[in-house]
Length: 326
Image (cartoon, rainbow, N blue to C red; front, side, top):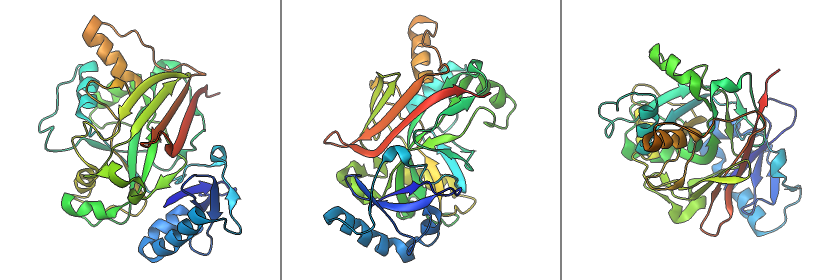
């Protein structure tokens, strides 16, 4: 089942069920007006949503609309919580080496995670507005999950049942602000502007064998200004699966329905390219002693997309342009 949100003038938009080929969508106000409303009562409405999805996939449905993905807003324009892990250890190593930091203790036992800005998720094709290029504007291509209500103390072996939907996320970062914030000991704030969320969310069963062991293994294509920047495997080299990340987050508190949890920048050892500019710069420093690839400038455009085994878009496209904030 695939879901999305159409703009309707409100903050949260209008929930629609999307056909598997992403050509048609059907509003379902009789089931839930918004995606958050559906998540809040998921067990009560899931069957009805699945029935709508089945009808959309099999035939034309009265009231369905031609789907223009460019019109969609973020499926969750505002979420109760955004938690971002760093499950790809290659990314952790490069990121910390780039800023001269050592590796954390128990890296293979305890995931890294922070709680970020959640009250705004940019639309899939909404620009990122930044006041200064000197802040080191970067993108981060990530896979994320949306959870139901997760009880405190949930174990990794139990956590998978609370994964309701999967998403593509661009976790924008301001790299030059990060070292100063981390040095003060409280973590990210100004260095993390709003993320962008891909246009479509899908239940795990939509991915077949590509969803295994709490990991989504699809091809991730990242382009910068029309040129290939990364061609990665979203499931490879992921040290912690999403159930591990959920269990870590829920160790001392419950998670509410609608929590969005990212796996961190997709990063492969020996992969083709990178999921963010920072990694490329770090690699350049290691190999030559200096980084030559610049961070983003105003007018730069980033495109990212997850592709299935047939090369078809799995969750739609995120296209983000960097613009100057007046």
